[in-house]
Image 1 (tube, one colour):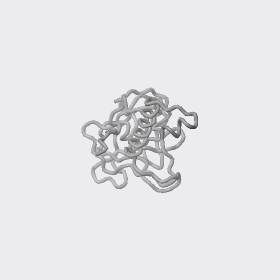
Image 2 (cartoon, rainbow, N blue to C red; image 1 turned 120 degrees about the horizontal axis):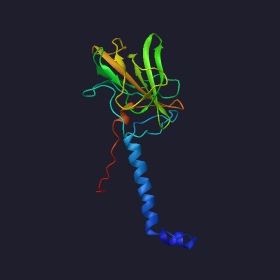
Image 3 (tube, one colour; image 1 turned 180 degrees about the vertical axis):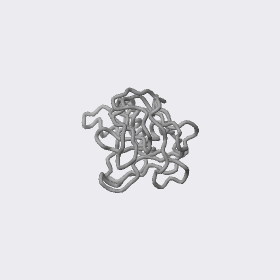
Length: 186
């Protein structure tokens, strides 16, 4: 391969080969760490997980996971449902500004815009914050209400993550990053 490239006037150094190999490994690792999606599914940029926390105190118990839609208008579950208790405090997952605290479709909802071009949504939450209020990770947004559809426990928090471009992502990515591990070729 090197002789052919040199014949065409291209100089290949060991650093170039290593850089290309590193990029290929990173791309493969990234693809393996992400769930499969169809070509029509918009894929969001992964937000930074540093400085974010779970919106409910205690262990995180997912009762229904993130199910990305096959395209922008298809059915899916655009967030995760977390087990909780009626009246439990719901906290902001990260720093930002409350952009909505009110009712949507008869259910109380709070949305927070975060730095980096994305927002988190919490539902059903009776708000204790107001629109325009600055919040930090752990700031109380409100209290969890019962009545979330398909909830197998007394109350579930539907927690969503959406980019400003309207692309939904798994909010659990805010809590941890997928690890990429390199394995030997054998």
